[in-house]
Length: 332
Image (cartoon, rainbow, N blue to C red; front, side):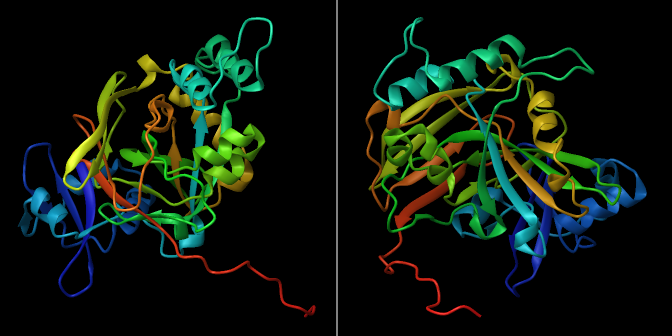
């Protein structure tokens, strides 16, 4: 089942459900997907089971909704500060080679970088047996719900940004229950927009490079993530593709299990606050930047994969210079 949210003509949020290849139907009883998921947790029933018992409303053509720009992020929080955008890197079997190519150098056996050492830790211990703790992954923070961009809207780099780089990924979508337990709604296509030029200067600037907007959706796939996901990432310019490449994800193509990545995120009490939403990006091994592509304002990213519904499309732009941020000249 695929779930999404749209903005209706009267400005209200509408929750839609559909099966792949079918029209999307409104769920008139649902105030929002957040409210619906909280209800499922309270009743201790699967979200799909709750939805199965709801009446269906108006039908919509998903492609037409996308063309009209009506999609919202498929899950939001009433207070954007309680939605967390985070992720893990060096998690895929090709990610170390991509990182090396992006940084313009390769590592040999006698001079391993910290990134290569971390990648090897994942290869050796990223898929522990059930009940065991595996190797920690690289982890990063992208911001809160104020950095979340709707499908179809532009990903805007700050004026000081050096790069407009896409990262085609799968994200896990989570809601924390009243008992502080994380509940996974499902998975979605995601674009973990990043500044690879800044990161290339020094890998310790990774934290700076990740503080950029991100998008996921337009639809959330309920249930488990397929072990072998094969998608396509494209960049469109003036109506034609200027770069296109397949990407592989899912556990069959990863050095870490999803359970291990989830454990190392939610082991922190900070990330188990009741009612909070988490969108966690699981990493990629495919970047246009590693192929020497320079993205320009006005380009459009497109990320697609069978089984995940509509393609995720976002334009890209750069914010105008706003001057240097200044702290107030006197203390309060």
